Image 1: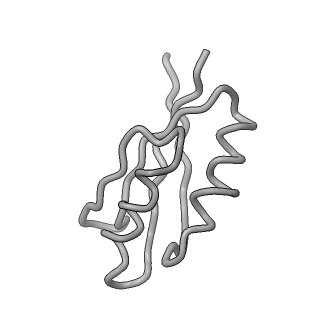
Image 2: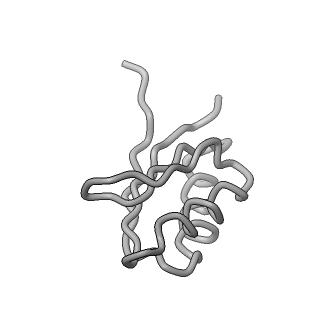
Length: 78
């Protein structure tokens, strides 16, 4: 079963479009859009496990220049 999550991202001023573009290229990212509101970019991602999802966020997403904060929200099916 695949683990899916939304990753809410805050960026430095003026960096949202660049961050979204870079994140969209990461394997496992299915959608990356810059938005308005308290977050600047919202990402939809998927991985084989929660551990793999964590590695994706920490090693790949948070390594992108211009990101100041992330909040990962795993999708649950109730």
